[in-house]
Image (cartoon, rainbow, N blue to C red):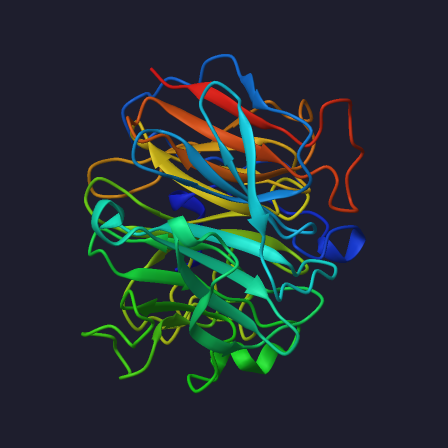
Length: 359
């Protein structure tokens, strides 16, 4: 199992998030197992002067909704760079890694006009929804009671190909929650648009997978396979291929454990080279952005979802990178920086959204 993990991805040996990033040796690359994939084009600014942009979700027509973690503001950003504040989300308690986090747009937005938010409140992390015309002041909670903490709040939201809502949560440094299937912490949840446990879930609850430390990136490839980023602790960050009911090992295992009861990662890095948050799939590759790693990782996938040789782009050029999303036409990525989050060194114009064309 350990050898399979090395071949499947990039296993790196180095320091951990304890040396600088709680969200977060030489490369041992696998043989090139996928068709060569070209990298992104030159980045350009879409918007600047933002404050810790955390979540990005596109509306029909190409504009995007963007959350700011610490300010609790929800903004609309056009591809031409016009930024409009839609309102401040009530009830958000921003502390350390908590605040206004993920955002998702209903797959049936043209009919229902619903927008979903994941945020840290006074007593919990929660998912709410609202009608776009009503603005973020009229919220309907649909999932409450997700454990909250200063760190490891998860926070990503995404609708999958099945049009069900997936919610990434963290174990908020209570590591035992990750293996407790009765807790919503340290999980990937799968719910209906009204927040109920989705039909076909493995345990009759909202839980889809468990044994996670802190998931902040979700993506699906062209074959419908699901992937998630995972912050490691002392050794290895991960990308996992997520499957129904699987146990991904935390806190029993960090990286590959080679034990039949746990699912080994598709890919691992040392924590200084990644601390991966957002994840997107486009143009035949997974694209994972690094906070502590301060780079964009491209991971080519073949038709069976096997990972090829990872390639790093823009190392150190833009600082901490938080979110990666594919544009609706599939021809570009939007990437956000996170240099005002208390762990970066902001440059003029930070924080920003960048657009990267894909060939």
